[in-house]
Amino acid sequence: MITNAVGWLRPADAAKALSLSRGAIYRLITPDRPMLVYWRVLPRKILISAASVAAYRAATSGGDFWEDRASVEAYSRLVQADIRELFR
Image (cartoon, rainbow, N blue to C red; front, side, top):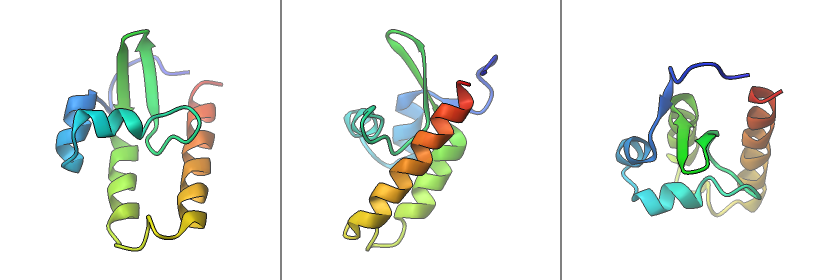
C-alpha cells in the first residue's frame, strides 16, 4: 500500500515531462486500458508514477509502438498489473 507521495507527479508535471497536454494524460489513465500507473489520492486528486512516465517515454520512443496493437495491449496489461500490485 502506498503511504507517501515520493516518486509521484501531478498530471500537469507528467504532461510536461512527456510533452503532452493534460487531457492526453487523463486519456492515458483510463481504467479499462491504462498506459501510466496512477494513484487516485482523493476523488479529484490524481498522482502519476514518475517511473511509469519514464517507462512510457522509453516504450513509445520507437515510432512503431502505436502501430503494433499487440505491444500496446501487452504494455497496458503490464501497467494494470503494476497498479494492482501497488494497492494490494
